[in-house]
Amino acid sequence: MSHPRRIVIRGFLMIGMLKKLSGSDKGATAVEYGLICALIVLAAIGAITSLGTKTLAMWSNVSNAVEDN
Image 1 (spheres, rainbow, N blue to C red):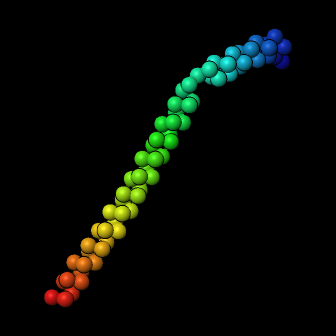
Image 2 (image 1 turned 60 degrees about the vertical axis):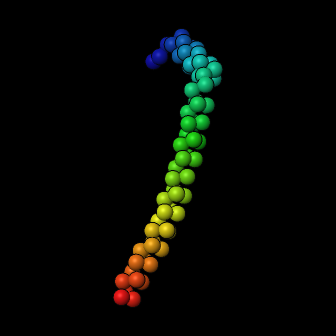
Image 3 (image 1 turned 180 degrees about the vertical axis):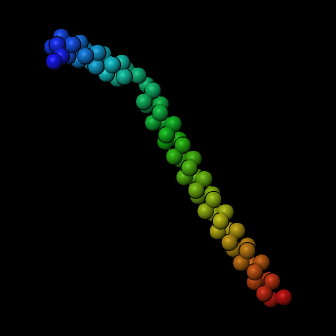
């Protein structure tokens, strides 16, 4: 069985860790970087989709030109 004093000590250690984390800005910075990354990914998806549509139209024109000749 564990000694009651150890439980209290662990409790104090946990409270100390939580106080340290609450004063830290690392979590907020990570969230900001995550949002920036998400915006970059969305912009890339939009650009790739647009490029794909234009490429499909170009190859359709090539196909129609080859069929006509």
